[in-house]
Length: 327
Image (cartoon, rainbow, N blue to C red; front, side):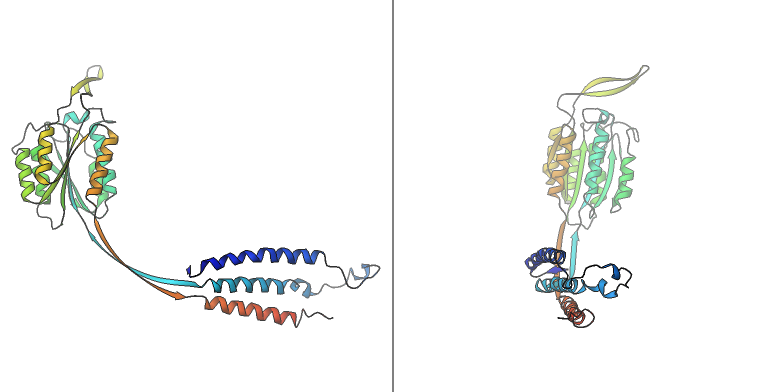
């Protein structure tokens, strides 16, 4: 319920001083009949009228409050909303090669990439999203789906060692393109994340980018890793030891893929930067929503007006019948 004239509701504050005045007035009231002692009346029956002596004032205050509500013009509204959404198809191609275990991102590159990507997925409920993973070869971990709970569970299960080691960027990109090429969505997007350069696979990244371009697929590429050296865990007979490895990101190749397909290249050197990159992609690939809203308002003051009239009539009836004062 809404009010057409809500400022009138401030008049309800007038009831407070009226109640205070009424209480103070009755405290100072003195009897009109003076007698020497009231003891003879101690055992006299108490009239039921005594419980109604404040009823007229209460009815008057309720009536005043209702009249103020009527002046504020309460209204009910009925609304209809039509929504049309245009979803985007997004394939995420994620590198899970051995170097993704480097710990320049915390706790390591793979887990940081998973955590940020999952938050990205949760923020896009209207989109079809799928997942391709790659290292020495590539396979589809999850096809395009709107069931994001399933997708997130499959994403959480991704670990290093699921497939043979290596960095087949071209194969990962080509696999992702094959998953979205037949989509009917107006916008088809791939987010390719890697920390290395292509060193295996039957399809080169450049060829895969040209295929994506012909299929109308836009590719955002993300190079993950600090500039310089990064700590890398190595299993030894004495437990895990750390050695440093050089960042080996083929940035010219990633830039070419992005440019060839109309996307953008980003470099994530830490966790915060990776979050910012996904936030930028999220803004650039917003789902379009068209909303048509209709409102119909109905006056609802009539019931309050009737209640106010009933209170006034009850007050008049009480004052002129059982609570009538004798001059």
